[in-house]
Length: 391
Ligand SMILES: Cc1ncc(COP(=O)(O)O)c(C=O)c1O
Image (spheres, rainbow, N blue to C red):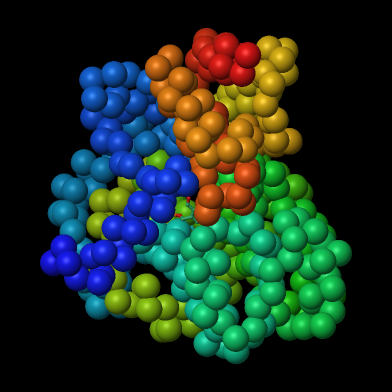
């Protein structure tokens, strides 16, 4: 690009503005990771920054299943699912997900981002009003801004949601199960009641609940005692607790058929490699089996331990109310967050440093994620470091 072009000058100005406001993002290059540790430029850190909640991403059984999948199906699929990219492995994964969710049909996507874009665009093409929690993920927000009719209710404010649905029955309601940056949960019971009262369709993005919550890892609905039958459309990324990548949407046959036939992210994208689908079956076997129960139990104990230690250490920062693996510590100012994060890194600890526009202005935060791969001594190190830094 010519350095003198208007485009080039504008982008340099925009980048400078991001730098001035301490909002510029820089990539780190990870050399090696286990589920609890991460190596960057020759230094090892305790990793509290990912979404690998059960530690499956480096589990030997999953890596072996990937190898087996390559032996069975080769490397890439070479085509979209609607051409020749839908393999036996994809089919078997869909069948397993149907069994887990109790839904009639399942469609697989390459990412949760793509799945959400397709879901919102389905709402647009069906000319349906859409009602969203204000804090739903960027993948839904970005797509919905091109819709003619949508409203966003204050985060988890059911009265506000009802006021919107009263005026616009027959809507599609979008919520997350566990909110990705706050770690709190949607009130599914009330959302189900509202969706029935106002003849609306409830879509649940359970990115941070699927696999992690509920006795059998069936996510936020199972955790809250809500039947999957009452969730009209269930979206679950396979990139977080499942330890790999991809996403699925489970719903009734007609809805899934509609997505297969209209979802541009589905139709015009090469299907994910079959070896990933093959390994995801192993991952789901672990999640729904006794090992999954053990991992969830340990994760829940580690999360409780973290919250106890945080309060016992009198850390002078606000820890948001959250019983999930996502434990946000509000720092507020962007520059201060960067400084705090740097000090944690100097102590060999890596946390997510989340700034606007991902979170509202003035609420920059450490996004600490506890996983089943963490041990008590890891949490002690983390809380001691936070205690020192907050003084
Ligand atoms: C709530 C939520 N939905 C969707 C996604 C996108 O999923 P993926 O990473 O598979 O694209 C994310 C990613 O972090 C998320 O937090």
